[in-house]
Image 1 (cartoon, rainbow, N blue to C red):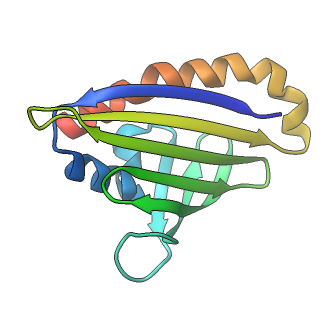
Image 2 (image 1 turned 90 degrees about the horizontal axis):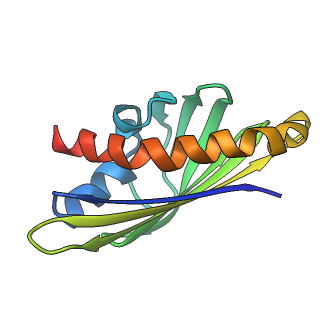
Length: 143
């Protein structure tokens, strides 16, 4: 089993700018209040295979790898943690007038004791991801 969530939003910025912003996890704490202490562990520019370490509220420390990088249309992160793994896939599409449509699919795989809590936590996690993330990403890129 896994917790899945989906959201989408339109951002009034060019697709390349939005893609580059999301692809670089050092920006994540600006739009995801659960993320903190993001440190890029790989040398060189952000691209396929880039790794970060980050802390995530209520879940702990993640090692996150850029698992898909097709600029400027698709990217995905594979985040590993002893309690919960996360796979987060983004799609970006030009929306005319310099705007970008962003869609995001999230799959969380709970492990160990967390699996027992999954039925109770799923509605809260899903609601939090689907309701907050589109707005916070849009706001961060509009600032």
